[in-house]
Image (cartoon, rainbow, N blue to C red; front, side):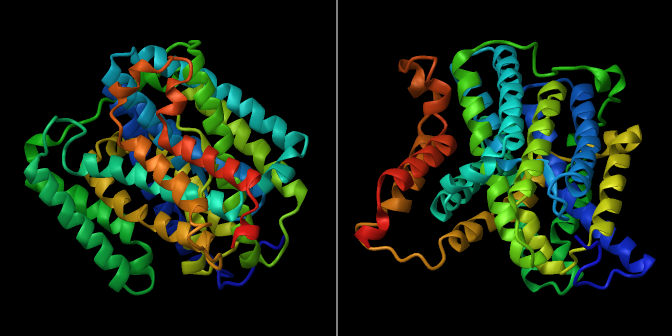
Length: 434
């Protein structure tokens, strides 16, 4: 693969600016995830700071591993949205039913380690190339729709203050809605790089505005200290069979990120994605899951949203991406920067990402573009999507009558929706019903 392809990054200034733009994209996508997960687990401030610093460092490293050893394309490898939504949903359900967060966290870590090993084996033996047939455009569409619903619902709760209170906080909600409008306006009406950096602008404006409007609600994050080197911060490894089973299945479903992204990158780089590319990519992703399980990070996968970034910037070179990955690692290595970013108000990050993940709806529509639906074949999409959304709306306490071994799986609308989509695609010849 050529390092320079189809863009004007042949001089140091342009390369540096392109690298900084990639850095902004990485930051906007990663910064909220460790904070929201830490808040869900009620972790101490020092542990949240440590999680954020380690997420910065390993995200940069994971990107370097993929672009140099794995698939070798310039797109981001980061904490996966499916994993993020799954973890937040599972922790929220555990809290609602009175389960121990330490036990759930420890079982999550165990399941993530097992899933990482399985994904590595799938990559090592080349099985991933054949499994991609399971992830049809309809399955990928279901994944995008359900992920968008689950994450946007989570972001909305944070925007209106429900992440820290049982009732809507009107001042916080109004501030968040204004921020959403601002980010959407910049994204839609902004030109060139201004539009591309709408998320970053929203985070900066929102962060400063929140401190000015709500000065008493800002907090200084504690230094990570020894927490930076602590292993298994969600709890010691545990063996809750239901949680582990659901987690392993979520890990296998998360491979849809790899398939959707690698298929989408082919027309951009004008070269086929071959079985060896799948093999190397899955090996790196599986290894990153192992690291995530040990360090208490949301497991990694290729970011499908990188395709939109590449289309918008038309910069496909690896050099700016390599530069951004190294700079992103420095954000975590320098402690004062980790403490600063860990103090980002959760409602600000949620408002910005609420706008960003609305794009998943467009990705879902694009995945099924060209497929015609009749009153018979509409079930192909409607059933898994609406079934998954329905499960998401049922209170976690309603599932207490279901055996604990299958409860974490059955109550997760995202995973169940994707599984149902795969089953329907395999057992029904939809083309015969059109």
